[in-house]
Image (cartoon, rainbow, N blue to C red; front, side, top):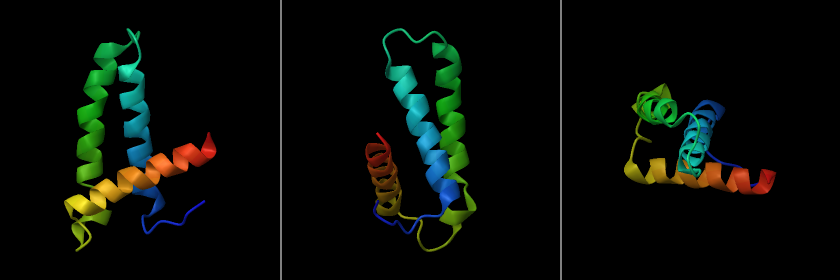
Length: 77
């Protein structure tokens, strides 16, 4: 597995966001309303993560975090 420059906490938050989004995209999810409420909360949690308070906070870094989580999920699958 490829090493990333991201700490575990932002990676976990992004992974949970991704799992929530995938569950919402499922055909007629049973808890659609709950899932729709969770996504913005998880986004806010990720946005205000202390990791992003430094110079690393750029749109490119956030995209790289998403890519790192997707590649980690692909390896795990």
